[in-house]
Amino acid sequence: MSGYHFERESRTPNSESYVVEMDGDEVGRVDIHFTANMAYATLCILERLVDEEVRELIGEIDERLVMTTDPFREDFVVTVWAGRETGVFADEDLEDEEEEFEGNGHMN
Image (cartoon, rainbow, N blue to C red; front, side, top):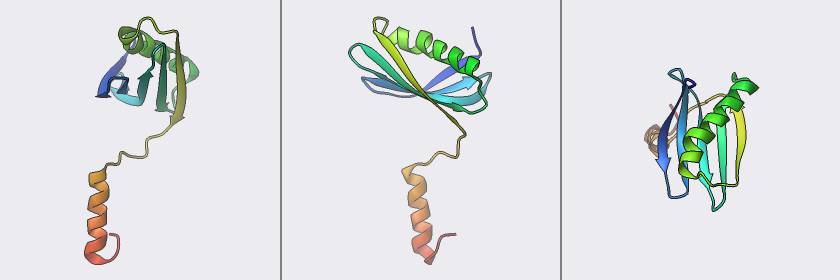
């Protein structure tokens, strides 16, 4: 078994989102969407992963996440994005920035 670990962040009746870790380091995230006979995924990974690692990761996602939820699906289509993380933003963060701006008339 590979060093991949999947930590679920969210789940709906038709989709799931996971953080992807390899040997304890975060290497990306995957969002999986299930339809009546297909499964689709958007895989966002660090740009340092090579093609062989990406193919192995897709295989792990299929075997450990998709097949366990929908073993009779007709196809599994994965769109892969490679890049770097620039941050995680939430409404609360944006509200704090707006309060700072309103409080002194300019952004700190």
